Image (cartoon, rainbow over all chains, first blue to last red; front, side, top):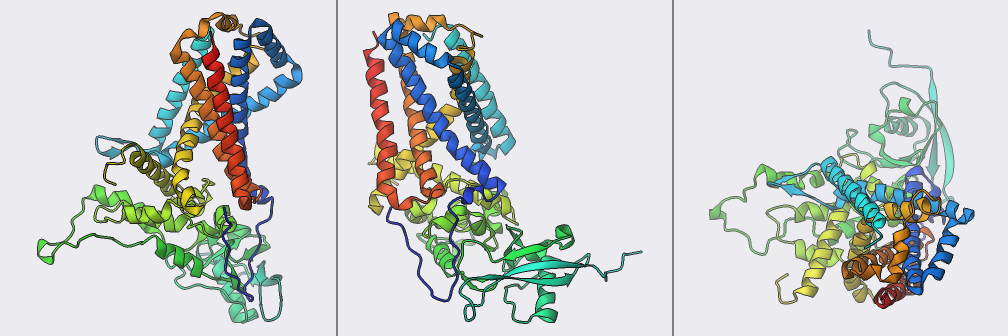
Length: 138
Length: 253
Length: 120
C-alpha cells in the first residue's frame, strides 16, 4: 500500500497516533484482543494439520504428537488458546447481526434473534464435533 | 420548590489550546467555571469565552444536539458538548480537547475539508438514471421502504464517529464511518439508482475495506446511526457482487 | 497496485469471513476435546488413532478437515494482516505483509491437501 499522505499545512496541528493506541481505552483493548484471536485460530489450524500429518505418518509419530500435547506447559498454553478461541466465537457471533440482515416474511428479524440463531447453530455444531470425534472421526 | 440555580461551587476545565501564531505545540490551560445544575460542558466554554478569556476558539450553534458542530473530546471521549452535563463530570477537572484524527486550526476548531471531500465522493444524494416525468407524480414509498434507510438518515455530520475511529487517524484516505453510512442511506432508498456508482468508490481499499470493525463509531453516535453495521453490510454486498461477477461474468451488474 | 487491490479485497474478505464463521462454530469444541480433554485423560479418542489404518476413508471427512484447516488459515492471514497494518502502523509494508500472510496460508493449505490426499 503506498501510504496515502495528508496535505501539509504549516499552521495546523496534527496529532500523531501513538504506536500503542490500542491500549488507550477499554474498547480498543477489547478490539485488539478480538483481532489477536486470529493467532489462536491460525495456531488451531496448524495443530489440526499436525494431527492429520502424524496420523498419516503412523502410530509412532502420532504417539509422539500425543505426548507433546500432554506436556504440562503445552497443556497450559492450550488452555490459553481455548480461551482465545472462545473469545473469538463469542465476539464473532455477537457481531453477526451487524453484517447479516435476515428477513422472514418481508420483516427484518431483530438483532437478538439473529444472535440467538447463531448460538443455537454453535451448540449444534459443537455437539456434532464431539459426537464425530467420539465415533473415531469417520 | 426548585433548587437554586446559582451555586458557589466551581469546576475546573482543562482546555487544550493551540495558537499557531504563538506556539508550535498545543498547551493545556485551566479555567474555573461555576458548576451549575443545568449547565452543559458547552455552557462552561461559553462562560470562559464571555467572562474569562475571549480568545478561546470553538464551534457551536444550536445547543440542542442537532447542528453537530460542538463535538469535542471530553475526558478522552468524543461527545456533543451541548449534551453533557457538567455535574455528571464533577468534581473534575474536565479535560477538553479538539476531536481526534483531524487537523487542528486553532484551539478546539478542527478542519473539516477532508471530511467534506470524502462525503461528496460517495454521492450522498438521490441518483437517478432517468427522472420520472412530472406528470407521473411523486415517488411513492411504503413505511417499510422508509424504515430501510431512515436510521442512516439521522446523521448530523458531527464527526464524533471519525474521532472515535482509530482507522480514520491511521489511514488518511479512509472514507470513514459517517460518509459510508450516508452512502448506505441512499443505497437503501427505494428511489435511488446510484448504488453501483457508489460501490465503485467504496470498493477501493480506502473505502469499506480499510475498516476493521472496531465498532466505536456506532458506540459514540449521538443519533444511533450505526455506521459500523452499515460498513459490514456494505462488505457483504461488495463481496457478493464480486463473486457474482467472477462466477457469472455474463450477468448484468 | 491500487487497482489490483481493489479487485482482491472481496476475495480475501470472503475467505476471512467464512473462515471466521467456521472457526467460531467448530474450533472451541475441537480444541477443548483434542488439546485439553484428551491429554488430561477425560476422554479417550482412541479410535482416532485407527484413522492411520484407513479409518479416515470418507472423502467427506477429509474435505471437512481440509476446509477447516484452510479457511482458518486464511482467516488468520487476513485478520493478522490488518492487525499489523493498524496495530503496529506498518501500512507502508503492504506488499511484504500481504505476501507473508496470504503466502503462508496458501503454502500450508497446499500442505494440508497433500497430507490428506496421501491418507491411505
